[in-house]
Each structure stands twice: as structure tokens, then as C-alpha cells.
Image 1 (cartoon, one colour):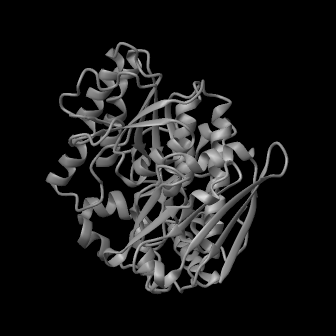
Image 2: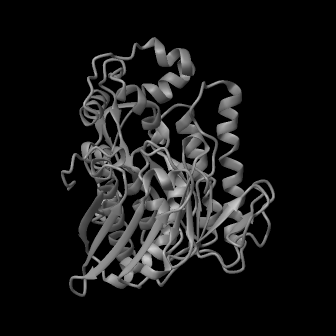
Length: 451
């Protein structure tokens, strides 16, 4: 069987082809709902090999075909790993045609034993990723002085790994600051307690994402781990940024909307709103204050106050997806609590905005303009998955798992946060409403274009 997916993207053919040649392209194109992991990307689209990890220890090895390599118009790969190659007979031809100076027709033709119905959502997702990323990088190119070298902590996490791939496909270099022996020239050993004085040499920007997960029962030990993984390491990294011989131009640090407290009712919370009360508000306030040494040293600092990130790769949606897919989901308690959220790809755009917009400094709410109540969130997720949502979660459930404090700070938290700074800057969200964001990341568009 042969399946062809065709679409147009608003970018010159040379840039579209170049995007595919850069590290991170395969990671950006792999749908998050598929049970696959990118093990290795092809070093060359002419004669390289890409490897995907599948369940049960299987490997999908795609070998590039030199006889079909014709930049910037074409490249192709073929499935060569056994036993999958004999079972599926997969060949994938990528073709590009310049429509005019500013747009490119992209055609993906797959010959295999996989039914076309199983491929439509995957290739629609790939088109949205390609077009969205190219648009974001074109916007950034008009504001940056060429490609950047960006050092990232927490690069192996859900956000860090996606941000790394996003930046490298845009032509930037990413240096991963890791806490294990480096495995290549794009990794540097980061000792949070005693960072090497040369750690940030040659770096244009720092993105600091590292920190222990806040999910879990709010025991004294868990709370101390959350706090200790953020405050002192951030302060030391900020101090190092300030005293580096050629300091990075900006220091972008993860933060959280937990700074606004556990429940502010229907109040719209902007970057200028007062901080709230509670453990997470205290931690986030200290976390942001720990970046001060960089700012005092003349480095532009941005604190990205992130809402609830939507991706089946991690976070809340990863936990809810299988429950709702089984038809066992429902609202939490009375469902009236506010949920301020953002899609993973939109969060990457916010980080890019923070990196290249030299007028941006201080707190930045990384949420969409469409906060929803829990009952609307659960009904929307159920509708996207074509499942009922009639089984409300009893109040005692989260309390048993998280403890009274964890239940109050996480499960029952209600924050109606709005992205005032981004709105004022004219920032454009890829998926500003919840349904389109969920349909995109869960592969549930049904062939209907997302706007």
C-alpha cells in the first residue's frame, strides 16, 4: 500500500530542507502518543541511520537511501531492521517543491503494509510541528544576532529534551549541563554545589530547568528535596553567570505559577500580582530571588512562571490519559478550581521568546489566554478521547496520595493566571484553546485542521 501526505509550509525550500538535516528533527517529528523513543538520529540524510526504540525491545532502524538524496528537493529512508523490515516493508520518500520564494510544498510518500488510516494522524502532526517550528524560528531570526550557543540544565527532562531539539533544529547550538561524565563535546559536567569556573565559557544564554519533581506526598523530606534542588543550585549558577569573563546575554530560569498561592478565587493573576501563601509560593519566591546575582551582574534574567504543561510525555496529562481513555475519568471534587495550562510546543516558543527578546526581563507567565475550570478540562479531555467523564474523583483520593498539604497545593490548587506580558508583546500561541492543544498532542484531530 502507498500513502501520500501533502501540505504546504510558509518557508523557503532551502530552510525547510535544512531544518530536516539538523539535530533534533526526528525528535520534533515523533508524535508523543506513540510508544517509541528516539535512540539515535541519522547523522546524514544521504547515508545515515536513525534508530527508534519500540516496546518489547524492538528497534526500528531507518537507513537513508543515497540514490534518492537530492538536496533540497528529496531524501528517502527505508526500514532495514529485522524482523520489522520483512513484516512492514517500509519505505519513506520525502519530497520538497518550491511554490514561490516564501512557501514550500512538502510531500511524504510511504510504501508499506501499514494501513493508511494508521498514518494520517502521524503525518498531520508532523506537518503542524514543521510549520510551527519554522514560523517560530523565522520570528526569532528577526530579533537575534544569528545562531546562539545555549547552555541548558535539566536537558533530559520532558521540557529540557524538547527544548534542546527545538533549538538545534533552529540552527542553535545546545550545550547540556549534566551531572554525569560528559559523553560528547556538547555536554559539560555541572556540579551544582561547586560549578566549574569555565562552565559557561562561550555561552550566549543559559536556560536553567533542573529541579526535583514537586509531585509526591508533601512529607518533610520531599519538601526539603524540592527546595534544596532549586534554591542553592540556582544561586550558584547565577553567580557564575555574572562572574564569567564574557557573561551570557541572558539567564532564563524555570519558575511556576505556584507563586500565586493555592486558591485566589476568580482573581486574574498577572506578573504584577502579589505572591500567595503556602509551601510552593515560598519555594518559588525563593527560587526567583536566587537568580538575583545574575541580574546584579548585568545579565538579563527571565523567570518563566509555567502553568500545567499539556503533553502525554509527562506531567498531569501522562497520568490522566490512560484513565480517561479507559472511560474512568471525571472532575476532581466540585470541579470549580481554575487550571492555567500551556501546551508543550507553546511553552518552547515562550522560552525562545525569552531568549531572543532583549526587552523581556523578570517574571513571565507561561500560560495560554484560556484558563479553564477543572470540570471544563475533564469534559474537554473526555470529548477529545470520545469517552464519558462521569466518575468524579472523591475528595479523599488525592488526600490519601499526597497528604493534606499536597492535596491543597497540587490537586485542589486554583489559579486563574493570564499571560499579560506575552499578550502585550503580541505573542502568538500555536494552540490557544484547550481542545486544539489536546487534539494536537494526543493525535485526535480526525483529519480536521487545527486553527
